[in-house]
Image (cartoon, rainbow, N blue to C red; front, side):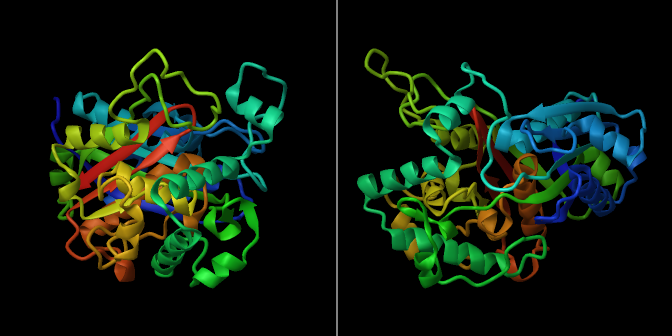
Length: 397
């Protein structure tokens, strides 16, 4: 039987940090927490999706079947989703589509990561046709190099200052103080940011998120199944965006330094990151004025400012004012990253889009404790995976 409504029945995380264990440890812990939260057994799950990543340094490879085996073979259908940092959202999209089609009734979506020390880098070996390998091999362009370019763009176009960037870190650090799953739970001042070493001018160490180990999981089911569970806290999945860029993409995105030319082709009216949110809003039948809380991809402090505009929480060029006026702080008009964001968690690639959905689930249920956004009824996530993977999920009560 087909279903119009899919809900989040359970959410769970393994605390993020630098634990150095096998990634499946974090995924299984998060999955068991999510299953307990939903009030179901692993054997009740008829479909499991694992968020995957592709990088050296692993004691194994992340895949749906890896988690299925670790939880105990049950005969459940399985899938694996790779979309870099957007893997978790794409995995949710697969599970939701299968439930809506009537092919599954309850699905478990899991992401987990054990990150290598230092900057994320492509797999070893010579691959001249791989743009990610080329940017490291030819230019030495780590991810923070791009973050610095994006930050410089905001300075040049909109007059952003390094103090604005620092205030994003201060805000998210304050939010993360109350999150038991966050790796960094410490108050930060603008002086702390200014005193940290420059990594990619104009960004300093405290402007850039770390790499972390961690896991996150959600249980999706049909609304009919949730009613049979007597779930009094249903959170609906209203939209999932997984769009790709439109040619020509005039804003340089990782890992491409040279983009498609707009000399002979008129650029789209909607740039890639704007299109990610637009697709989610259209699918959900909601708009930015409906959003009460957002979890965005703050790989750097400056990138969070970009997302305010991409999600249409404010106009283009108004992100700095939106921040300074306190609108993105808990208690403000549209709090952003009440979890503390990646600033407090760090990157655990296949898990981070799922972690955003976990946070929104707790926010919409009113279960977020001291970081609760009062009266939250609609939440949106924003993420972006390497090689053109869009990612946004909209949830509502």
